[in-house]
Each structure stands twice: as structure tokens, then as C-alpha cells.
Image 1 (cartoon, rainbow, N blue to C red):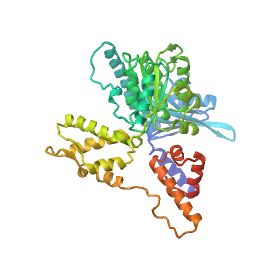
Image 2 (image 1 turned 60 degrees about the horizontal axis):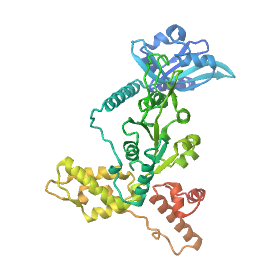
Image 3 (image 1 turned 90 degrees about the horizontal axis):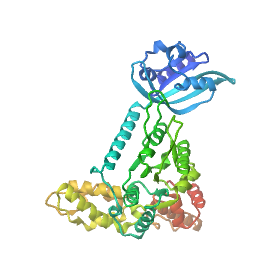
Image 4 (image 1 turned 180 degrees about the horizontal axis):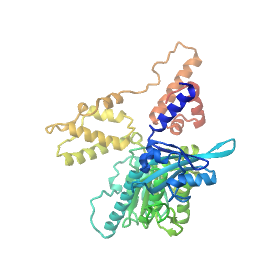
Length: 469
């Protein structure tokens, strides 16, 4: 077998092994590649489609319903566009398509379409929207629903850091201004968002939360802004979350996961207070207080181009930074007492406290998962403890947690004082940088502030000493 035949064999096997559907047509619209995944998606045998004109096999598709048609006409690529249609097995499917024109020596010779099946995701998202609408209707009808609604009383802590965050949040609860909440994963951002809503003047209106990282851009757009009948095959008139939250609050969790094009559309809504459904022409006014959360430092996300600067300024009218648990260690005891009471009631136990050893371990531990990790740890220990025991001890907790808390970075360790002075200073500098990074969970900005040097200086030294964060 020559190398050309071998390469063709490898390519064929790759094309038919991937999960994404692949459809390639030449300049005359004839299908030259149609892989197994696309065959399954569209309900057609490959031999029926191969070497046939695309328009003959799919006579009902046109530029409005087919990305391949559009790309062949315009010569411009289409990235991540949603397409919903009825396949040959009479199944309604939804795909996210990337379609790219193919050129040779400046001449258009065809197009390739890569389709990812998101039918189940779209169905679930539509069910989610319908369920939210039903819940909102019940809330408006004053029907008691057993859904947790958090207020500031549910935020446990007496440290100055948490009190500062609560004070800012209280000042924002009766304002219509947007709020941006920054905090590490598990630090309690949604508790703050719900508290702002349920203690504010919008508390009798809907509170709706959407995780921006949970869905692809094309589906998230329809969920946020709704869809208009005819926007694509099979679409129906469906209000989005902005319309459902009208008069109330919309929480956009992990805003740093939202794509830049969708951020631009969100910015327009915030500026003009109206939405336009996907595929619609009508502008619909909305009165929604937007609370956005991010688990990355907002300034760093702007520098990296993750969050648009203009959207940041529009969201950052009120800024709340929820401190990580390691930055408010005096609250650990209060939180432990609260969770012990909570799980005593849930598990019918009679636990009184933590042992002194566990308290010391907890006070040294870095808590990368923050309050959520602490709650999970207490819950796990409450499952292990016997019914006749009253104190949570070391053996009730995971061994790796106890071992981890014993690990501390001592700056003076492993520095050879017999080395030349420049080398000793270099070793000490490395230790100090490692300690600052460790204590700030590898956050460059905060580590630089701890060391009282510029962020750029710290980055230079990390590179200089080849420090592995």
C-alpha cells in the first residue's frame, strides 16, 4: 500500500469514528463525504446521499434553513449556528453547526459542515424554561412552594470581610442597578444574589438563575432572549428568561463563561432595557435587575479578553467581593456549629462539637472549595460518626484532608547558608514567592499585593525562577 492510499484509509477511519456529523460537498453541490455520525443524525443511509446533489436529497432546505446552502452562496464561514429540522425519520433534531467554505488557489471548490447533535440538551433546556414558567406562575398565584429562598440571615459569619460584603449587598437590594459578584467557587455567591432579591423591593417578583457555563452559546441565547416562530424550522414562540424575570431579578452565574458575541447582545439589553427574541423582529421592553457572578478575578478576565470591558462597566455598578474561607478563618467555628446543627436535625444525630485537633487542622487548611467544601466535609463526618458519639474527631474525616493540613511552607527550610549570598537571596525569593502563591490560591494579583510588588514583576520572577504554581 502506498503512502497516499494509507493516508486516505486513516482519514476515512477518523471521519467515521468521530461523534460529530461531517458533510462535504463540492462546487456543484454534490456530496463527496458523508460520515456515519451525519447518517445517524439525518436518518439517511450513506449510499443514498453520496455522489448525489445536495439539493436533490434535501429539496426542502434553503438559505434560511441550511448552513451549507448559505456558505456555498456567500463564501463566508458560519460558526456554531443552531439548526433545527425534521430528519428523514420524522424526528425533530437540533444541531450546532460550523460550516466552512473550501478554496483552492482562490477558487471556491466546496464546503464542509461539522454538526454536533444537541437535541437532548435543547429538549432539556425547553423543559427547564417551561418548568420555570410554571413555577413563576405558581409563585404569582401565591401558592406555597418548597424551594429554598435565602436571605442575609443565612450568611454565617462575623468577620470584617464578610460583614463588609453583606453591607454592600444590603445597600444594593432596593436599587435597580446591576450587581457584579466575584468569589471563588463555593464561597457563597448565590446566597448573596438571593439575599439581595428576597430582602429587596423585588422580592414578590420572580428570581431566576441561569448558569452561563451549562449550555452552548446558541442554546443559551434562545433561553435568555426567547425564540420567535419561524426563526428556524420547528421553532415556537417561547419567552426567554428575561421576559420570565420581568419585574424581578435574573442571576447570570459564571458570566465569565459566556461567549463574547453573546456578551455583546447582553450589553445591548442592559443599555436599552428591551430584548428581541431569536429570529424575531419585535422589541420587547423588560424591567429586570441583573446580578452576574464570576469565579475569576474580573480585572484578570478583562486583561485576558474573557469579559468585554464595556460589559464589565455596565455590570460593575455595584461590586461585591465574597471573601474565600481562608481569608475569614474566624468564621470557621461559627460555620461548623451551624452545619453540625443542620445535620444533627437531618440525620437525627447528637453531635456537640469538633475535637481540638480537628479545629486546629481546619484553621490551617487552605479550603480550596470554600464554604461548600466545609459543609460537605461536615456532612461526610456526620455520616461516619456512631450514634453514641458526640464529638467529630480526626478519623471521621478523609485522611488526605488531615495530611494536607499538616503541610506548611516554611520559608527558612532547605536554604543552604553556605552558598554565595546572591544564591541564598535567590533561594529565599523563590520560597517567599511560593508561599505567597500558596496562600493566595495561585492568584497572581493577590500574591503580588502580599509581596508588595507589581503584578508584572511577580510574573517576571515566576518565569525567571521557573516556579511551578
